[in-house]
Length: 159
Image (cartoon, rainbow, N blue to C red):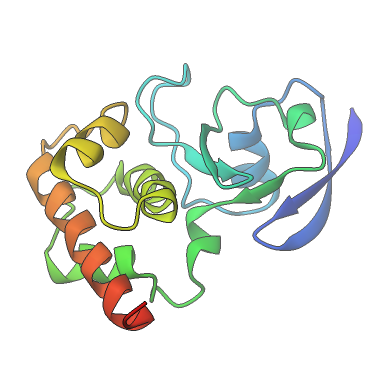
């Protein structure tokens, strides 16, 4: 066991864990941030996606020791009250069916919108291609990303 100092959702936290412990289990089991889901455990489905320094990362295959000095953002850190444009769009359009993959979908979409505020369908399809949705709500996910993009543009006003 080692002590790891993490920056999670803007807070500095210390945890005790073996260096090779997946970040997913530290987030869920030690910090109680259960919005990040376990899906496959091998980094293939994307349900466990968080941001490391603003870039999507699979927390099930990211060792806690690899996160020192990095900013970790989970779905809980995206917005304290669910007011992020993606979260609002997801609710308005009833994007999720079972909802299991949605935290990973939203976190991946948030990274896309931060680097490309007005993405095309192709941009969305490329960015989201690694996040599996067992229910097949891909068209609603795409619509939700477009809606969030529009919402964000309206709140920023003309540039």
